[in-house]
Amino acid sequence: MRGWRRMNRWQRAGMAVAATLQLGLAALAGADLAQRRPEQVRGPKWRWAILIGVNYVGPLAYFRWGRVAASPPGARTGNPGPAGPVPS
Image (cartoon, helix red, strand yellow):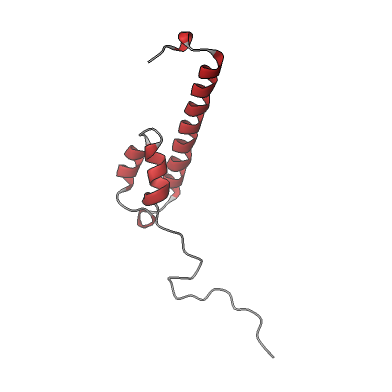
């Protein structure tokens, strides 16, 4: 592995972009996990919180397999939602 001082300008820029992308993905996944209720997450939240810290793999795995798909309002509760116009 090369040191930062031994890298040329393009290699440093590539590393900066990769680090920004990795931290951004982890921040998005962490924020999403924090706002979800436990029943909206597959498995324990603490386990996903640890996994999110694993490079790119953790956040991408969380977004792919960790979240339960959101359902439209009223879809599982039996509540049909607001009624439309009443025919006259």
